[in-house]
Image 1 (cartoon, rainbow, N blue to C red):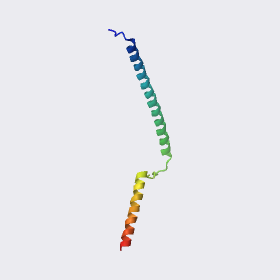
Image 2: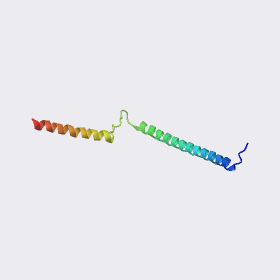
Image 3: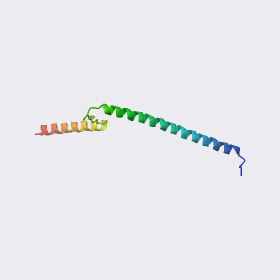
Image 4: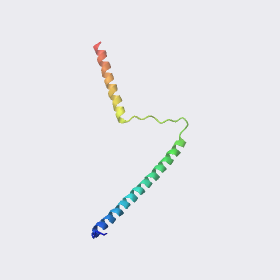
Length: 87
């Protein structure tokens, strides 16, 4: 039984096509991202094969831990100065 409103049926068709297009766009984006990650992994594997035996990367500190370490060092130095001057 048809409702007689062709606009309703047409809007549903337009919405369905738009949803399919969005899904296709996301699928293509995901596929391209997967290919780029795969290329990066291959490049990293080649780079790691060139590393000498026993090579270890330096441990890097992020800005928060570096800032916290500097703050703790300055507080420790201030406390040492207070203890030295109080004697």
